[in-house]
Image 1: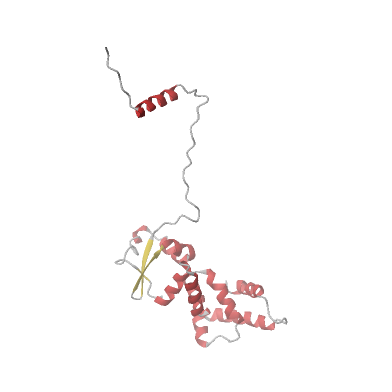
Image 2 (image 1 turned 90 degrees about the horizontal axis):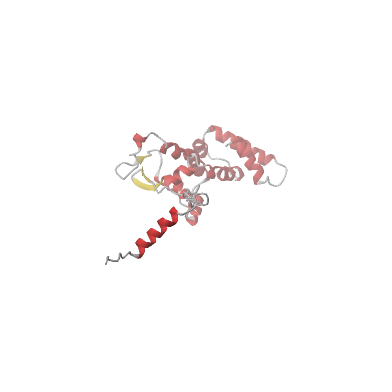
Amino acid sequence: MGQAVHTSPSAGALILSSLHVLNTDPDTATIDKVDIPQRHESLYFEDDTVVFLIETTLFKVHRYFLKRHSRVFADMFSLSPNKAQEGCDDNHPIHIPEVSRQDFERLLSLFYPDELAITRLLQLASPIDRVLLARQFDVSPWLRPAYLELCKRDEALTLDEGMRLGMRYVIMLSEIRQSIRANKRPSLPDGNIIAFINQKLM
């Protein structure tokens, strides 16, 4: 009398599954389509950080925000691979000697949006400071509001402000301010002033 063959449930299920595949009509058989996951176009962050040395302080921040908001940093990070080590850790920071710690903190406040902190920093920073930072790092969201504030204020540019801005910008701002004051209406709408700014300063 032969011995009975005991098959485990899992093995039996596998055998039945194999038989089902073999007996399936090729004309009616379908293969389940597997959707390959795609990265979200804007909400997939490469959590890659970079270290900067500003004065005597080290900053470790995300490349993503720097590349997204500033063409200067985008160009910096697109350099040849042999510079990849620069900024990788505290021993190999990217040194930016011409930038102060305070200015770099103000710049980073735009990339790390704690709303209250940004509001306070922008209130403390003069429109001249915001213009210079925006021009230096190519951060356009700061430019128009700062230029608008300079165009609308009653006080003329000081000698120090003019020297910091540069002759071309002083002349363009003066022309816009003159146009505002030559307007016969009580006040020129901000949209009109922005149009002047776009034409002369952007």
